[in-house]
Length: 148
Image 1 (cartoon, helix red, strand yellow):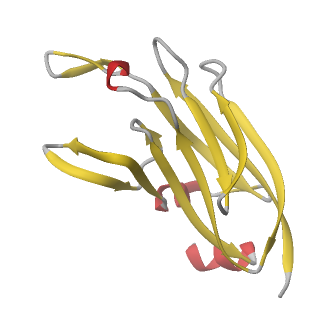
Image 2 (image 1 turned 90 degrees about the vertical axis):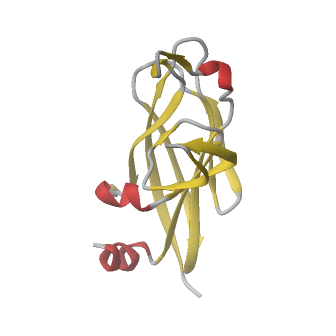
């Protein structure tokens, strides 16, 4: 079985008014970083990992959202706390539209558009505690070519 070194660069921003979004980044169920968005400016999480050939999962979690962090007036969201995934780059290649191919798995079911949900497809603005889950495989370049 072969291995490859992959360099990850994750660009995150936060939308907040009262407290800052706390997040964690995981690769294959191993925590890479636990932090919080330090300002409204872009925050970059960079790391390198050696991965075996086969399937892998990159996870980005919003950790600290409460119902009090969303202020609604007259049916409109006035203030909110969000973790925004602006870009993911692997080996200097931006995933671009593949960013939207992930699944956002909520920690607990929520009501969205008058329907109960436990996940969202194609969501990069995390507004409930939960996990953005991007599945990929190694060799990375083969996976990328198959997805384009």
